[in-house]
Image (tube, rainbow over all chains, first blue to last red; front, side, top):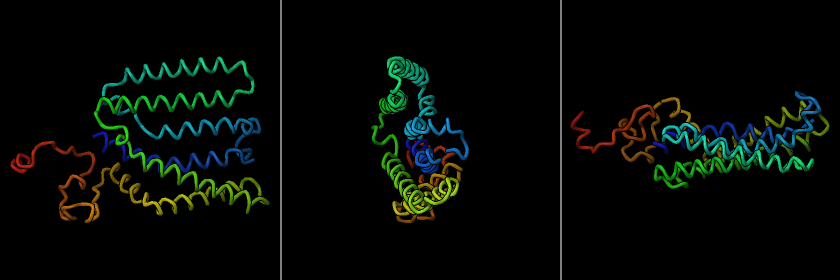
Amino acid sequence: MLRVNSRRPDVLVATLVYPLLAFAFVFSAES
Amino acid sequence: MTIIYTPAYVAAAPVMRIYILGLVALVVELATVMLLLRQGAFSMRLGVLALRCFRCRQLVLRRVPTAWRARRRAAVTAIGSSIWQRCGRISRRTGIPLRRLQDWRSLGLLLLCAALAALFAWVAASRALAAFGPEVRVAAGGGLLAIAYLALLALCGLGRDALAASRRVRGETVVPHRLACPRGREAPCHRACEPLDRAWPRVPRRIREARV
């Protein structure tokens, strides 16, 4: 149950969130 | 960035960067699993303990005016250690090894792809578009990052996994490839083909077939 219910959504969230975080990290000091 | 924020906010960008590193760990969603396992009290105790440790460290470091990086690092460490403790607790309660609790390989690869794409976008935007204003650099950097990220996902084969995961989350039936599903495409009752909202009965096959 844990494997099915937790792993897949977390990978999906990471797929969407990680590039946004990377973008914010890199371009946060762009002035 | 002065496009959106004032110069005072831009001065705090390094601090926000450290917080962004902490947010990376929060992708692993454990709160619902902890509640399902009736570990809400443990989770709360852990949160209070992490908060106290963090607060003590903040008080110690407050005397040093230039230690803001260390203070932010303390916050990130508190987030990371709390998640690690929760993972360990779930692993012990369920008997699932820590390495199988999450798809760590995919999460690591996704993080690597995002970091490489961001690095590529930043280098390209700062070198090739140095003559343009920050708005152009940020917009072009975002586009470049998206393209590079998608290309890296396709290269690693992670795009297919993400699409399958989104279908499963929406409750759609996912028909696996004929090589991945030993019973082929003509077997809609196979476990891998089931949507997530239907519980798979844990009964022997003979009894299950007799019921049908």
